[in-house]
Length: 165
Image (tube, rainbow, N blue to C red):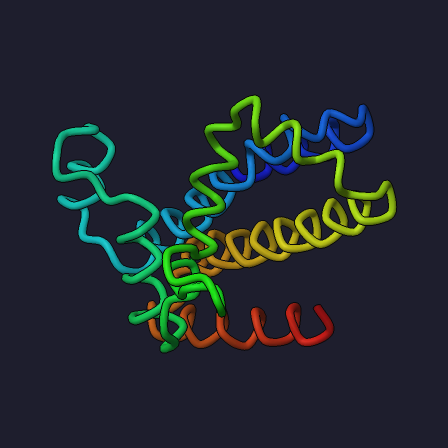
């Protein structure tokens, strides 16, 4: 699914459909964290329950915490408050972009073409990295690699891919 989102985002960028592009960002994040969670952390019962859409269902808020603690051994990023803004975090911005409204669309006028292209490029690169990591997880688990080895490999790959990002 993340590959499909990536392709849609690439098409959006080429067609200058920036609103569509931005509404897919949160979905790509949730898909990434849900993929890591279901592949490396969750039990079969938890996956079945999550797929049923019955409550409680894990949201991006929960999934990021599970993955950051269990795989990355890092604090969460998406819920970290933005400096100087007590009530604003990257997750708040992702939630807003998923539910674009007319006011948000009006504010894009403040961005230059170069600024928009840079945003596109950075987000597209981030999604590409996530696709590579999930492909690694899928390939490694299909080959029967031990869970701890896969997690170690995820962290090595993630560090290498994000080093110059």
